[in-house]
Image (tube, rainbow, N blue to C red; front, side, top):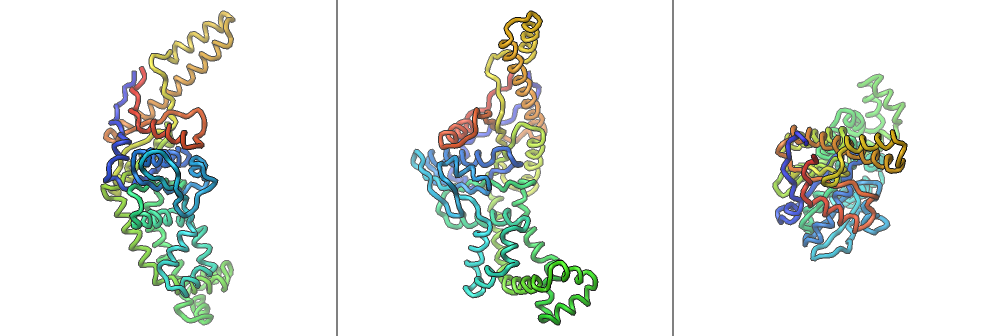
Length: 383
């Protein structure tokens, strides 16, 4: 019998049904099922009467496939579901989102200048952190539109799945940083003469910049900074509003993990970080759990029975099945110990578990089953 602490149960349906719940953010390390969890929550909420949009930033496009679509893009697409609610889904296109911001917040001539700028094109499509920042921007756009009463966000598949919380500050540091100011200095010093003054002022350092980046790139940066400068305050203001929105009681964070040491270690970090940032945590979802059936043969007895049959040279297939069963029971016990360890460290965090599926989820019926599993009471610990 387990000696671990029993965590409070996460009531998923109560969370989905509560009209005060406006945003659900699914976060966790990569490969733990965040996208499937977000999609399943969206289907279940819509079929229980909510008007839902699911925003994914997963480049694998699994969400589109599981909802019967060939692809998703930067515009919400309606998914036909049962019940009285509506479900829309979309996949973040970070460059298109950046372009939309420029088009919305700059006059047409300046927007055209920015969009055509080679430095902007690189910044908007490949700069580290841009995806996370644009996820925050898109979330803010969806919330301001008022078109849905529930937004479910599948966070970026980055090394640190809470990078999107830091993205606005990192983007600000980049655009305000010393390196950008050095690159922008020629524009403020006056063309080619400015480049010479800059090189003289910073000596070898700027000589290296000129050799590596080239004068043309410096000019592109000058043009970009000059055109973009008036927009940056708006970036900061919107990011700060979205960050505060994530701290309100209408937002609920779900940390998603697999029953594996690294994933639960990351989940523990996420829980602590969310508390530090005063973000409202709803609970932990543990995916792909191997739960034994009630009153099933223990690992020790299965192993002993297999050894007895092998000693007698009888029932080879039965012996192999018993060993397979014993291995599964040992896996289940190991997963349970890991969950117990998390519960001991975070005794107030509600938990729900989702059994491992026999095959990958690839359609709405599969998502409905995951939704039912999410909402089902967590089974009692095995004896």
